[in-house]
Image (tube, rainbow, N blue to C red; front, side):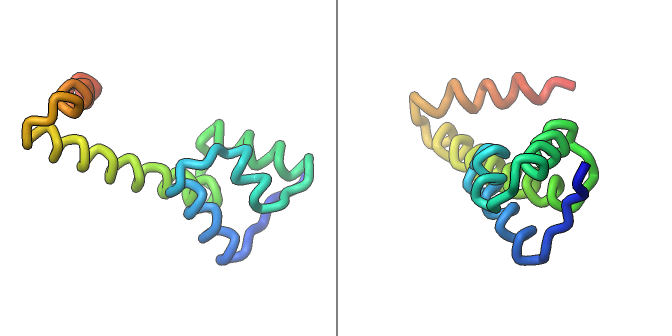
Length: 96
């Protein structure tokens, strides 16, 4: 199977795709990966391996998730009836 090696620019693009909450499949298409490369890319992200490109995609996704959570919590604190239940679901998710 092919080994994936990405340039710094490509790693930045992968991070941006994660920030934009693009799916791994769409990210692979954006990068122009061939079928075998795409398969390895998707498998690596699914398995959450410690490869640079996987970490870049998950970091971007998680950064956006943090921003969304912060926005919802701020709206809930201001009394938003729509944001309140979402913020409460975040609290339930925090149970370890």
